[in-house]
Image 1 (tube, rainbow, N blue to C red):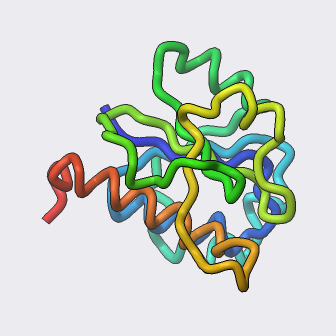
Image 2: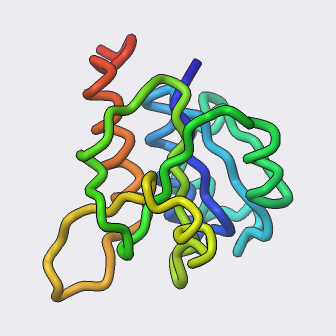
Length: 154
């Protein structure tokens, strides 16, 4: 089993590259949901992921519904600045999925409204709208890894 990060329609290659590096370092699986705002051979994407792409378990999906269908029975947590619960309010399990929306719009409101019990936010001051996507993914993943005693990481 493993933890999973799902990026729904990511737009900025450097963010996806940085997240892929976090995935390589932690063994977290990465799921990219089309349409992507960049080509996967984009040099910025590769530069951000450095030479760790070989260590990333990555899957591409045509829709988020495809992810849900393929991994039916799994637990999905939805990151949003609109959520009421904090990311630290949950008890995570191996196999959990952390879903992040596109940088400019986040996740669709219908998805958040359908899953309020598993929507999470990262606390922050009101002077900014949100944190950077790659920082947000790292914060959430490392909290889950901490709760799981960092699995086999040293």
